[in-house]
Amino acid sequence: MRVTPSPVSANAPRVLPALDDSTRPFWTSGADGVLRVQYCPSCGRFVLPPRAGCPDCGAGCDYAAVSGAATLFTYTVAHQQFHPSVPTPFIIALVELAEQPELRMVTNIVDCDPEDLVTGMPLTVRFEQHEHNTGTVYVPVFAPAALT
Image (cartoon, rainbow, N blue to C red; front, side):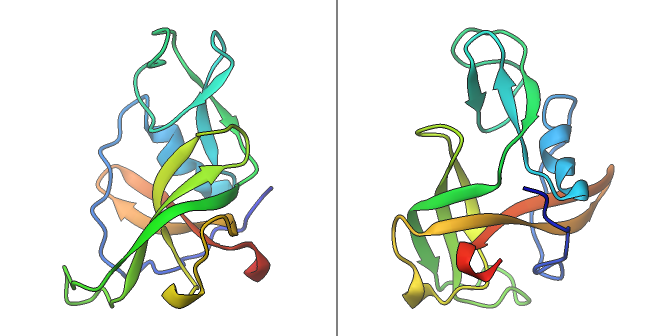
């Protein structure tokens, strides 16, 4: 699924990831609206978070496009304001990507009131565009699938 990159909350401060050769494709793939996740050709499994090699067999990983579809596995609602320009509450979630059981990533849920969250609800990826000291990164966030 291709998603047009749009700043969901690009003005909100965010600690941006360190980029290296093994993580850069994950953090920049949102430029074309496609979520890409590491894939181990030896094990035939997706790998998250991105790293230098497969955590199971040590083989090098490639990147593969995924659908961007996920389900809400679990979440917490943060009410403590860590930065004056980040409004509360905000949602920190663990989502499970559709491509593989237990392929989970930590992210934020956007465009959803916390009281509307339901474990197992369908989600779809969106991207926040941020400027990084080494270029532009696209942070994957998720929204209820019914809104996309």
